[in-house]
Picture 1: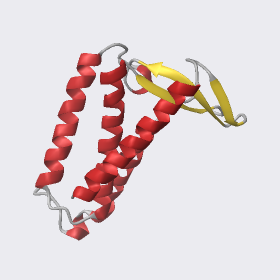
Picture 2: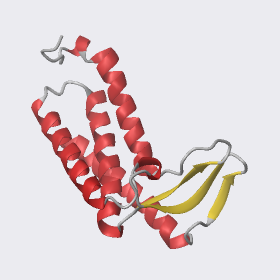
Picture 3: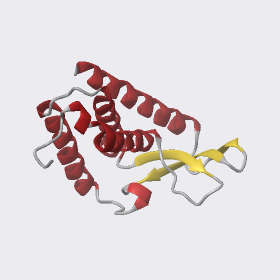
Picture 4: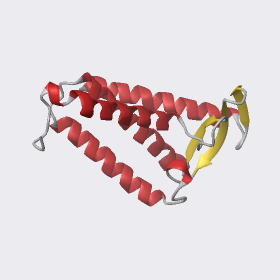
Amino acid sequence: MILYYLLAAALIAIDQLVKWGIVQNFALYDELEVIPDIFSLYYIQNRGAAWGILQGRMGLFFIITVLVVGYLVYTFHNLPQKSILAGISFSFILAGALGNFIDRMCLGYVVDMLRFDFIDFPIFNVADVFLTIGVGTMIVYLLFFEKEEGTTSKRD
C-alpha cells in the first residue's frame, strides 16, 4: 500500500514542478506554441472549479476536497486490495485532487497551462490529467476486473 502513496507523492511532485516552471517562466496569459495549431502552453489562473465554474468559492472547494480525499483514503484502506490497477487509479486520483488543492491553499487559484488549439476545450493542468487518468482507470477496473478478482461489494 505504501507504494501507492509513494506513486501519488511522485505525481504530486511532477504536477507542482510543472506549475512552478510555468509560473517562473511565463507571465499571466503568455503562450508558447508547442505544436502549431494543435497544442500550446498558455498560463492562466483558475479561481474556480473545472472549466472555471464556481469562481471564488475557495471554502466550498476546501470542504469538497477534504471530504473526497478523506473518503478515498478511508475506502482504499478498508477494501480488499488485490488489484494493482485499483491501487494505481487511487494514486492518480489522490495526486490530481491534492495537486490542485495545494494550489488553492497556497495561491488562492489553480495554475492551468495546457491548451488544445484545434478544439474549443478549457485550459487544464497536469493534476487534471492525473484525475482523468485515475477516474478512467477506476471505471475500467470496476467494469471489467472487480468481479473476477473477488472484490465485489454486497450490491452484486
